[in-house]
Structures are given as C-alpha cells and as structure tokens.
Length: 206
View (cartoon, helix red, strand yellow):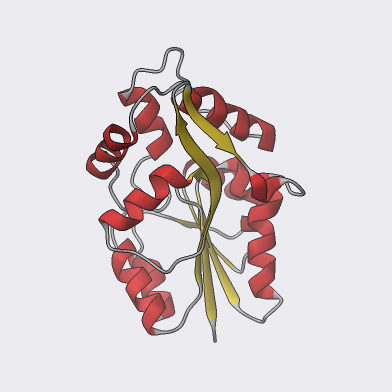
C-alpha cells in the first residue's frame, strides 16, 4: 500500500495556532482568539484583518515565530520517515508563508510542498494574498489535493483541525483531526482518529 499525507498547518502540525499566537503577542485590538471559520471568506478576512494589523519588522516577527511556534510531537520523525519511504507529504493551509517557512526552517524541514497564502511586510502592516484560491475555496482546494493523490491510487491520510478542512477529511481515506474538524467528523459519522501526536501515523506508514 502506498500512502500520501496531506496536512493543515496551524494547530495541526503545530501545537497551537501560530496566527493566533502572533496577533495576541503583537497586541492586535479586538482579536478573536478562536475564529470559527465556517466559510472560505471568513478565513481570508480574518487573516487579512488581524495579520494586516501587525506592525512588526520581519526580523522581530520571525524571531517570535521561531521562539513561540512548537511542532506537534512526532512531526520531524514522521516527515523523515515519509522521505525515507518516498511518501508524498504536503502542507495545505490558509495560513501565511511568512510564518510557515520559519517554523519549518526551525525544525530543519525542507523539500515539502507548501500551499499557503503569500504575505509581505509593508509599512502599513502585513499584506496577504491568496493566488492559489482564485478558482477554489480554501476548503475545496484542500480537498483537491487529497483527490489528486487518490486519483493516483494513494491511500490518503489527512490531518486538520478546522472547518475549512472538512471537505478534505470527507475525501480522505484516513483522517486525523482536532477541535472543530474532529467535532464535525463525529457529528457527520465520518471515520476519524483524534490527533494528539503523530506517533499513530508513524506506525501506519511504517
């Protein structure tokens, strides 16, 4: 059996949502700590609004990211095993490349396709663009990556935590979920495993 792993980033590969940590640390007024992203536009609006309000230099921003963002237990070992076994691994996220890439660098993770928003530091704040979502909603894009591998006869493993992960979870063969996604899968009778660490996935792909 050949596997492919597709995963959300914030709160999935990391112990906590990095975007939430950032807006809290940089004291963005009116922060919604746990936004319930039911719709694609909600997720994009939240990112553009709250991340756009951060007035920090790139150095200050990345320094905090590398200090505060912690990988979920077993992440590095899982990715190393995936490389060794030639198992495709992709990150599909509504988050920003400017914090995803520093986190991966912190853990010496490279060579992984990352599908995420493009962001830039500007004098007025962080600008956020979603070029990959011109013809997709975020939920449908994530699901499309799962379907891409299923069409090539991979057994797909999807990991996520939010409602924009739900379509991908429905399409996947094996689901590991937390928080909103876990509750949605249980409610809709979709077979799901609770994601605590990546040890269980390591055992599967061994």
